[in-house]
Length: 153
Image (cartoon, rainbow, N blue to C red; front, top):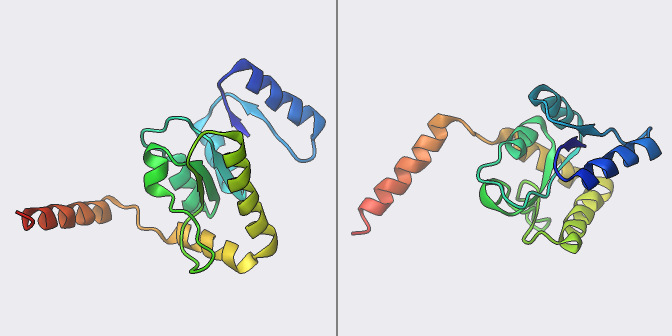
């Protein structure tokens, strides 16, 4: 876990690390280098942000093969499509309001897939890594939208 914020949550992070030394590492603070190392080395990225105008961490995560579980706000909503197990589509899990039960439900479904449905999990990782997030691709999509809008009149 990495981050800063409310003092009580920072203390809880330190306490988790003390209690579960073999399973949890807490990093209170922020370092871009450390964020990339952690993101590249974990299986799941949890981003319960209440506000996220853009969101790059989920993009980095998917590029590394790390599956995101995000609160569907701002750029997180725009970049993480909900996993659909019936047609093997989507890039991760989203929850639509910043409520504990919604987060637990999304994370629970994610962990179930991780444990029980390895092929689906590998598909999530593969789709995330195969996305074309280049400026050329973004410009092409933008141009298509503009051309389509032009001929709507």
